[in-house]
Length: 327
Image (tube, rainbow, N blue to C red; front, side):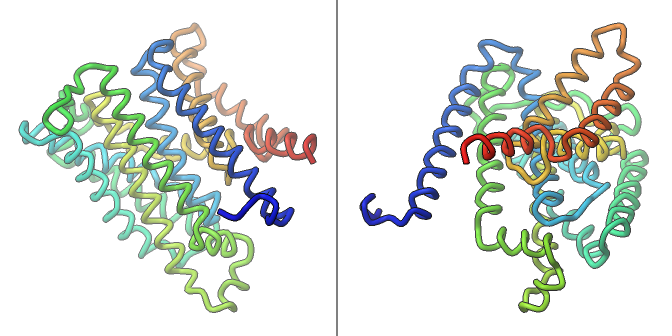
């Protein structure tokens, strides 16, 4: 590392920004480590699973500029494949089941991407929605999914054959580890040269083409990574709740992840985490109140207010405020 006195002002600002970011990450990790002693671990695990799903979607929308209405297919595929394998093969450890579900979603993402990636805008969104609906109807008819009843009784098993995940505290720390690893992968992708090309494609695709980049290949890789992480979220969620259901494959779920991402702040790393936490918290609290039948209406109203009042989302507006005050 270069001595501090030899750094240019720009390098010094980058160094300070990196230091602040790392400090912020460590603080969040410390909070996450003690959180299950303050809040209900199962609720926290649900937030982490949906936050991971939203982060996967944000990688595609926020950094590649691709709006997918079919991401529920990857969430459900990861969940169903993991649930089926763990229920059918008792000796299979949960990490291998989750890996299999993630790989299945990666393969499905590659197939979806190959078909949809050449389309843009609303046409891309409609193609992904149509493909996801095909997957939804397949899971209704497939014998291994349990149809409308879902796949119940998925065993949590023992991590590495040693640590029992039946204990909620052990399960929470496993889910937290999965989230941290996946989030680190997303961050590394975004800040890599590949991520910079993705942003260039999002901002001005014709110019990226003129510079010689194969934009379809870049977008396809982003789509596959996003699908794989969404499948990882679905697989982990199935192990947590010991259940895989059609709810995860329905187009409503694709709409919910859009809501989470836009509400928290699209294009920001922490936006989906905040949005997922807010949506899951509201759903949980409202479901236990007399307004339980109005959950969708209330979430829709919040979404409209968010879009009209602060289009950058919660995290985006906070970032703007911080930059304005600490210029």
